[in-house]
View (cartoon, rainbow, N blue to C red):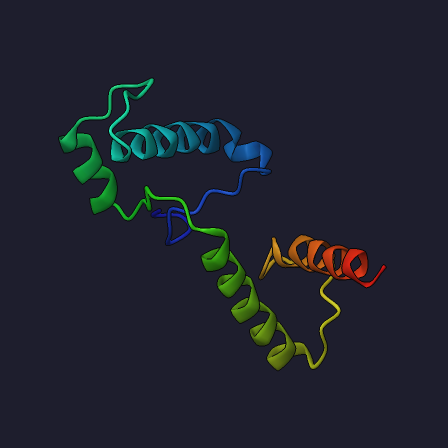
Length: 112
């Protein structure tokens, strides 16, 4: 968080692969606890409070929330660049290109 200003760790970044895996395990355990199930790892109320204090989002975004986030990113991308052709290596919005590709694919399947 101190280095990047947030706690969003990309899952496909080799430098932070172990941290990303650990965060995924924490989120999975938290989701299980929220459903009243037993978690694979010990996740106490104190640990949950600490993680929330540093800004780690424990609950996973719904697909609708992710879609809304990507749409906002796309609008911002167009505002800055004047077009919707998001390159695969877009550093400002690293997941936007793959989201658009999935959107195009789904659209094309429906047109058949």
